[in-house]
Length: 117
Image (cartoon, rainbow, N blue to C red; front, side, top):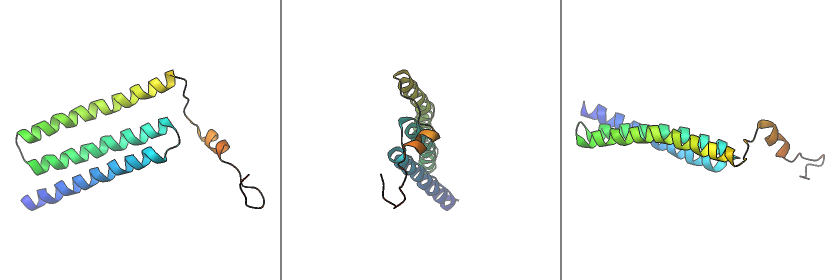
């Protein structure tokens, strides 16, 4: 049984690490502040959830697990609230989300000879 818990905890830790790294890549690759916030908040909340659940399995039943659960609840509730507040602040300052039409118009079209204008 301990081997099953060990494997499950490492699977959760690796999944959490994967989602956190995907969120970091999304933070760099996305075109505007709103899509960056979305990529970072969704994947980081999921990644932190998996990481903490894996750590709880590693720690077993005890005070450390209780502390990890409290930290998980803190991240679970504050992450989306902070992202929402940041999005509202951006909208208040006049930043508008980049729509699909804006992205298509911002991309330079290739000319007939294949060179960029």
